[in-house]
Structures are given as C-alpha cells and as structure tokens.
Length: 44
Picture 1 (tube, rainbow, N blue to C red):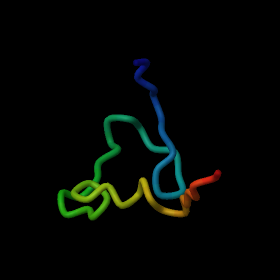
Picture 2 (tube, rainbow, N blue to C red; picture 1 turned 30 degrees about the horizontal axis):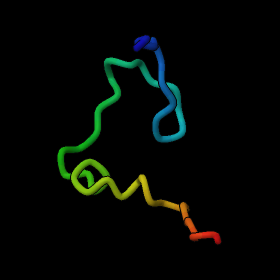
Picture 3 (cartoon, rainbow, N blue to C red; picture 1 turned 180 degrees about the vertical axis):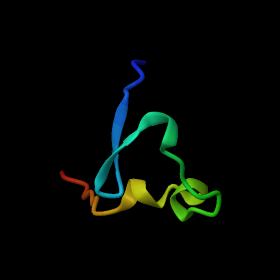
C-alpha cells in the first residue's frame, strides 16, 4: 500500500504522520462509521 504525504482529515489536509485519532473514538472501537448512511435491501 502506498503511503501518502497528506490526507484529508476533519475538513483539512494534514500530514500523514500527524493524522491521529482519539483512543476513545466510537468509530475505532465499534466500527460505526461503516454503517453510516448505508442501507441494503434484499431483492428477489
């Protein structure tokens, strides 16, 4: 995987090395970001 110099985080470009999240982040512990806005329906 290619490591980038900058990433988009919290509405701004930050250096890859400075991109850190809080250890208490709900998305980190429960993966809730995966389900945000995604719906799936079974089709026949």
